Length: 393
Ligand code: F3S
Image (cartoon, rainbow, N blue to C red; front, side, top):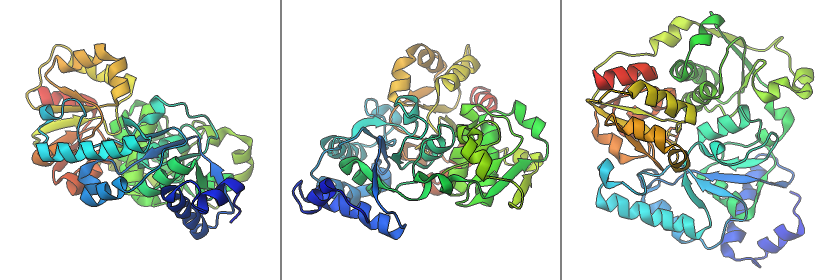
């Protein structure tokens, strides 16, 4: 693998043992996947931030590292809101361990902006090379923004933060970004009226079909929030890191794509709208949770409108980034006037607060997929309107 002078100096130990080991991780990864060189990344998103998911072994590993990030780097959601963790029913022991994990990342120069939607707050441009690790953020960055990142693990993303580079393989190379599966629905006109929940249900089904392939959707209509929900669900039930939508996503419109890709001869599947509708279950739930992935400004506004003048009768959890919450205090105030709670830094899946709920309604196809295994709760999928109705009736 081609290394430059600064790589050689790092490997010689001149910049410390942590950097040396981190570069070796990147080189080993590159060799496995046939990379010829390392390329600079413009930002890094590091998963493995909740004490619930990394435990004491992860904390001990982080505490043994001694270096600082050399590119903008930020964290995935942690297991609790940093300010009001007691409100969420987090226990003291968990909070203490979570604080220690945050201290370790702070020492490593990672920004404590804990969100799976960093793209709302950090400038990502078309064609940027990134090293991001949260699967829904990876799908959104690649597909909706046209940036380029593989689906990194927590350690390889952290290595990229401390070195500033990633091995050039996989989705960093344009020819590897072409679709290998065509997906449609049997009544495309129905998708015009779909919201994020329906797109999440479509992704829930499509991800199982796609596995780790790159789907090309034909005939569907979706804005950014809907494509966010679609990608998040496909990344959960499959390992989809990139998808294209005919005439909508940026790469599907560039000459390289049009000249290099044809649907002729590609495997093609059609998902019946009735299958999408069948994902919406109907059972009693104890609580409602929305914000997987973290909510956008438009999603906060929609929720504030739906909850206006109403009071929730079930626990209602809302998740968004700290930056989004701080920028939209008016919307957050309207939501919380209903008795719902808006939390920063954390989410319904990586927080232990969800584990005690028994059953949860969500409008997220990704959460619908993860809640049983990660939190031991029975999930119910519903639209945002149904979530509000079930919480307030
Ligand atoms: Fe984000 Fe947590 Fe969902 S990290 S995508 S809110 S599982």
